[in-house]
Image 1 (spheres, rainbow, N blue to C red):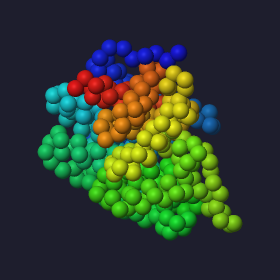
Image 2: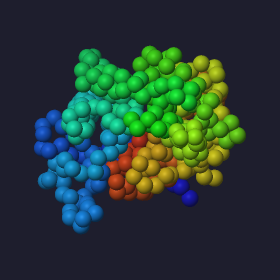
Image 3: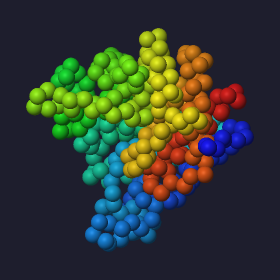
Image 4: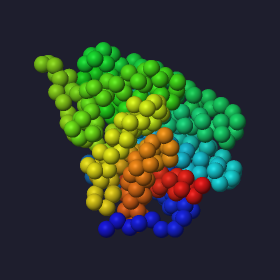
Length: 359
C-alpha cells in the first residue's frame, strides 16, 4: 500500500527540499569546469558504456559526451524554480537568490551543451525549455525586480521555432520533430501552454482545438498520442500517456474560459478513473523519459487543485491524486536524473497543495 504523507505542509516541503539537495549532489555538475554553468548528468555515478569503458564525471564536472537528454534539463530547471519560489514564499531571500543563480547557470549549461545553441531537433523538447525559461523570467522579476535577458532570449528563440513547427497538414497542429512526419500531443500540448502564457491566446486556442478534434478520445475522456503521416495519409498512434493529460490540463486552466474549465474537469475525472490505482496513485511509466511522466501530470494537477474556478469535486480529485502519488514515493530512491527530478516535482506539487490547504 502507498504510504500516506504525514504532518503539515512543512513535512512535504521538507521532502521537496531534500529531494532538491539529493538531486544536485548526485546529478548536478559544472559543465567542463566552466564557471557560471550547471548541468544534470543522466547517471549519478560512473557509468559503463556499450563498449565496456567507464564514463567518469571528470572530478565533479559533467563530461561533454555523456548521454544528453535536453528535455530532462528543462524539467530540472522547472524544479529549481519551484524550489526558489518556496524559499521566496517563506521569506528566505538568500536561498531564493541562490536558486535563481543555479537556474541561470543551468540555462547557460543547456545552451553550451546543446552545441552552443538553444534550438533542438524536437519541438516538444523546445516547448519544455520555452516554458521553463518563461518561469525563470518571472522568477527573476520576483526576486530581483529586473528582467532576465538570457531567459527572455530563450523564450523568443524557442517560441519562433514552435511557430515554425506548425502548418495546415492534417488541418493544423505542430510537428513532433523537424522530420515533420508526426503530429502528437507531447509537442502540441506544451506548445499550447507556452502560447497561452505568452499572450498568444488565439494560437493556443487553435492548437487546443486541433488536439481535441484529432487526438481526444471522447469514449475514454483522455488524449491519445498522435497522428503519423504515411504515404497513404496518416495512422493513429493510440497510446495514452499520463503527462499528455497534464499539459492539456495546464493549457485549459491557463485559458480559463467556461468551456475550457468544463473540459478540464472531464480530463481530471478520466485521469482519476483510468490512470491511477485503487489507492489513487498515478500510473508510472518506467524507463528514461517515462520516469518524468507522472511528475509532469502532478505539476498541473496541483494547479487544478488550487484553481477555484473548478468545481470542488474536481479540485479534490486533483489533490488526492497528487497526495497519494507523493506518499507512494517517500521511501523510493531514484537512480537516474529523470526519476530524481520527477520525485522532486511530485513532492513540490504536494507541498503546494498543502500550503493552499493551510491558508
